[in-house]
Image (cartoon, rainbow, N blue to C red; front, side, top):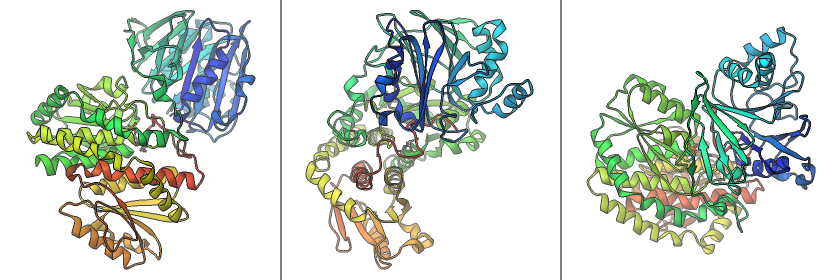
Amino acid sequence: MCGIFAYLGPNEKAAEIVLKGLKKLEYRGYDSWGIAAQMEGGDFVIEKHVGKISEVINLEEKMTHSSHLAMGHSRWATHGGVTQYNAHPHTSEDQDVVVVHNGIFENYLELKEALIAKGHQFRSETDSEVFAHLIEEELEEGFETAFTRACKKVTGRFAILALHKGENKLIAARRGSPLIVGKADDGALFVASDVPAFLEYTKKIQYLDDNQMVTLTEGRAHFYDLETGSPIEKRLISIDWKEEEAEKGAYAHFMLKEIMEQKETLARAINADPELIQKATAMINKAYGTTLVGCGTAGKVAMVGEYLFANVAKKHVNVKFGSEFKSARHFLTDRSLIIAISQSGETADTLEALEIAKSKGAKIISIVNVETSTMARMSDLVIPLKAGPEKAVASTKATTSQLAILTLLAYAVAGRANEGKQLLIESEGKLNDLLNPRYEAHIEAVADQIKDAQDIMIIGRDMNFPIALESAIKLQEVSYIHAEGFAGGELKHGPIALISEGTPCIVIAPNDEYKAEILSNAMELKARGALLIGISPDNAEIFDIWIKVPSVGNASPILDLIPIQILAYKLAVARQTNPDMPRNLAKSVTVK
Ligand code: M6R
């Protein structure tokens, strides 16, 4: 949520470098953007604009100032509307201090009132601007001291970067929101919310942990504890991300590229290190209670996990959404186990759940895509998805990889690890039936037929009930059509009142023990005028439209989801929305 990127180095095109890198972080927020560059002599040039940075033409020509130090921000609005004033960077009263911020300063109103009482005037409605004024208040003690004092005054989660006029130095700190330092061989230093911003310059990175700050001066990065001021030694980590993985290549959108990549990404998940699966299995077997935690799509994956463990391993596990985790503190102990599911590993609600669990002494396993994320670093065991960067806001390839890992775990806990792996290998072998141009064209035709619908309903039973919920998220976020998922048997208890003539209803009907029941639920919808779209290995007379999927037993949640991902994408294209950057959303939700 909000992308931050800064450069300090020998290249005099700092502003241009920041601009280019910021475009690669746009998936984190795209309401507005801004860049501050420090000129020779110490003055700042600041550009701020409403809208997406990628939509501005010939932008590079605008950022030709000669500068060695610049920082930028791509915003997902929290406090204050989407206006140029509220776009970052923000400045102090005298404009000598410039800041960019990701997160929320929870006590900003109180701080702002106190600053106003001292005569400060504010230009924006944001919480972020207070930080520049707080530094300004303390500058007599020096930039570093003023910065750390300001950090101590604010509450909430944040990543914050600041510059001071005339000082060739950048100071950054984090508490809850990600920040990574990159170090290039030519001495250039970078600070970013995520690695793709500087991947073309370096793969050598250092992570900031919570309550740590870093000062960047020419060629040197010094890390400190925010509370005590003591220096911290940081390991330089080499990452193996490939630049092209973070680009969309010949695809029109990242979402389509990532859907199509599932052939490889699923294979990678299935081949997860058996030792890790074994270790996780031992931890699950030893725990007095396991709780799966995730948000949004990852939360729905967690729900599938509950069914998988029940059906395959006859084992009860709990499920909690990250944002609804707090009540779990009443039953967590040092014998509890939490399995966190996340693409980014930076989702604030899930992180908060892990903090609560840690405070109770519980063990943590994380199933994450970003291996070096905060979540991974908080965990006792990490099972990486190895799906490569996922940049479209709508999660697709990370989702199916998470489902595959949970399937492996459920089978391993049942003592049938090889059977689980074999099932997944066979299922992955059938992916070509779904990821091919003919299949895509069929779904495109379905999208054309239903693109003007007001509502779309999705039903499923058992493991495919959470898949119906996840399908609704996919359709909502990129097509903006009102979509809702239901357990097949629940409709007649109320929601069936929403069905009218022609309402598209997607029926997920794998060849499982619930097939007859889900088909009779579909009948109930058809009798009220629904247009039935069956996702099933076999056609059924009641389907108006049939989307064929292979029959793959307990792997059906994975394969059933893929045509719906394609449908969501095709609906977005047909309705001329941007599937990679849907309105009001951001890829990584780092605020609570
Ligand atoms: O990075 P995470 O997996 O923790 O993200 C959780 C949700 O924010 C995410 O799944 C969200 O629901 C997606 N945009 C759905 O496609």
